[in-house]
Length: 380
Image 1 (cartoon, helix red, strand yellow):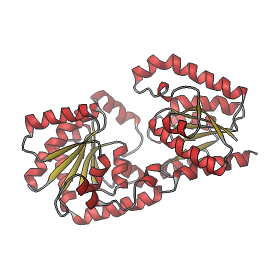
Image 2 (tube, one colour):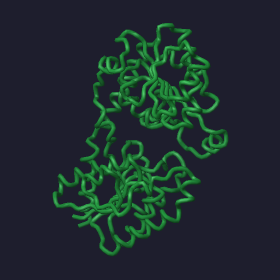
Image 3 (cartoon, helix red, strand yellow):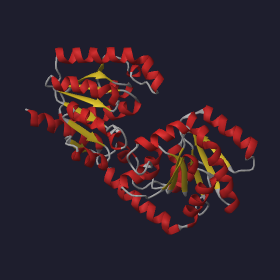
Image 4 (tube, one colour):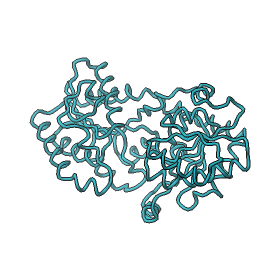
């Protein structure tokens, strides 16, 4: 069996490597070709281009690299039409992969797309292109499966690899020991202002102001703040030195998951970290701030009522979320204080998060590989 496979960034490389490993377990003779990163290379993919050539973010950057991206896609089409694989799998990177998948499917090659584009949130008209491009969508969230089923796209829910990776019963005390934090019942709040500098600049100051407010209400509370980069760490240190010199904040480099595990509650930026915090079964308050223009466009384009991942998965409001001007001390502080004080609410959230963790814990790598094999069996 020959498999064409393309991943465009690090998260896709991780998914691709797990999928390749499980496909080989089912079909030991399988061969892979396309584009992958270090993990996929270690699993044996023949990569025609370095994956970094596809890892372009931002509108201006994409436009600058567009001629090269189109040339790479045309070359992949030529290669795979000249010697067709048994199946093609595009992993995320929808702007690149969906066009490639459509060309290959038109030529009779079965196509799979792994990780749903966010058509359920905005630009829902793209579902028509997806319907033309893919024989099978592999979704990592159950609400995505329901969306595509309603729109006539063949879909299989495989679960989320992070749910397989993160243990169902995180060791709280070990997390505190690892970070040299006092054991329970000491109160610890984790602060995660985002992994990008722009996020840290948008939310870091208001998160630290909120921490100072919480300290006034509960003088015993301590704070742990993982910094994704040294540049972000230096920026936050400058704010602490200038405005909050007496605030008991422990900055650490990386180690976000340990910080989540150790905390009583988490104040964080919207993004993948909200899913990880949910999987660590930690109560949270979520904030989101972007430029005024981006926020104005988002309010008009986005079709879902929530942006925090736990709320999207549950289909209802489980955690407090505050966007733009609503993300301020006056809202964030009382929401966090309630989580620290209300033992029953914390317990209810943790039970809900554990149930969702179990729902997403499906052995995603194996389920994705099995779905690809079933597609080929149906086609043959």
